[in-house]
Amino acid sequence: MANIKSAKKRIKVIKTKTLRNKIIKSSLKTTIKKFLAAVESGNVEEAKVSFTATVKALDMAASKGVIHKNKASRNKSKLALKLNKLTA
Image (cartoon, rainbow, N blue to C red; front, side, top):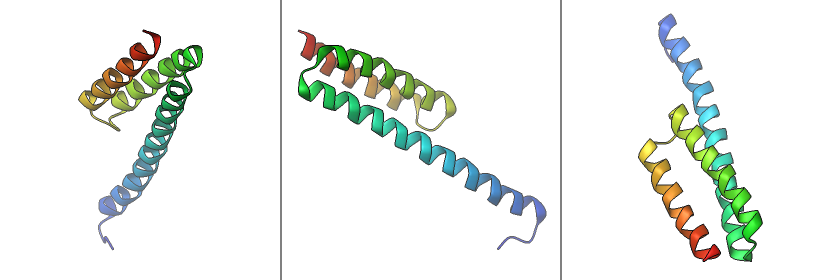
């Protein structure tokens, strides 16, 4: 356990940030799964709506620093390919 006041504060701050990051990552995974489920079912309209929500969630997570911007870009590209394959 930390003895210095600033170290104690850092422990508290890290706990809250870790919790926030877990929540954002979990919701991100959920939106991706919803999109993939829509693609699997072949529902184009639902997939398009879900795709925009997923892209928004990826961008938000990248802007908050939860995931790296290149990972967000890579995931968006991968999901866009699946959507394009479905609509083609």
